[in-house]
Image 1: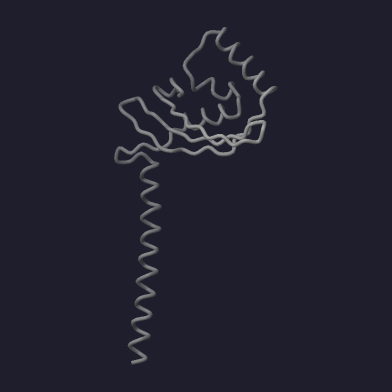
Image 2: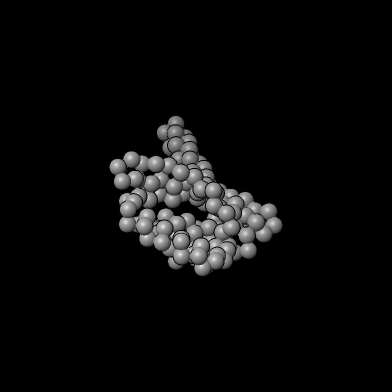
Length: 141
């Protein structure tokens, strides 16, 4: 009787550990496959990620290579606006979260959630959708 109880208890524990390990491993493999772009899934674009980091840091020089070409006047106005916003606004990015995206042909859309804290200490939540084509961010919404 005691031997049977020990056998059932040990088997149940082994089964529980196996189920838990299988769940964790399959979840990790699923995330890896989704982010790698295998089987048609689209993961986060390094171009979109670099753009969001440069945008949140208000550094137009960091994103100049991943945007379509601009005229000299547009570029000068952008640099002047970035300098002015850095001097006057104290917005602190708190988090950047990649929500997901999709692609059709050479076009892909990547969606981000951004949490910011403004000068008054109020947290604000925004979403951004970036359209990437030909290695450039062509649209931000």
